[in-house]
Image (cartoon, rainbow, N blue to C red):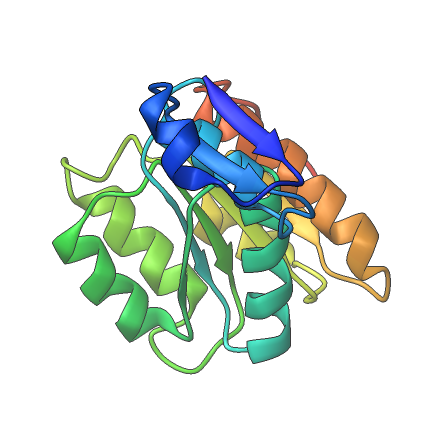
Length: 176
């Protein structure tokens, strides 16, 4: 039982054996967080978001959290690789063009380790990918999303791709 009320009386709610008590208005993402903690919504683990653009990291972290995901951000490849050493994510959202190690290198390092090899990776890039770039990716990503001017459109595509990846729906890489 989750109590969602305009009245602030958490003690009373917990005395009724409620899992949690939320007071209206509820902060964005809070309801998903509580339902996920209760095990009735959301996705296991976390989504690792890797991008060297702080604005994109903040936007994707907020939107993923609002959609029921636990998002952990890394501002570059080295930070992402360090995080991968500590805890295995359910999915990775990876920007390709960053200072070394870039997204191509991070993707390669993920795929070379047996313990990380099955993690779904969704690549996002503003780069026009060449045939050589596609060969470097070599089917290692579940989806390739093109960054553009439409941040909301990107977020929508990211949520769709990450949700499918977190549920284990493998899809061939496709330009998004």
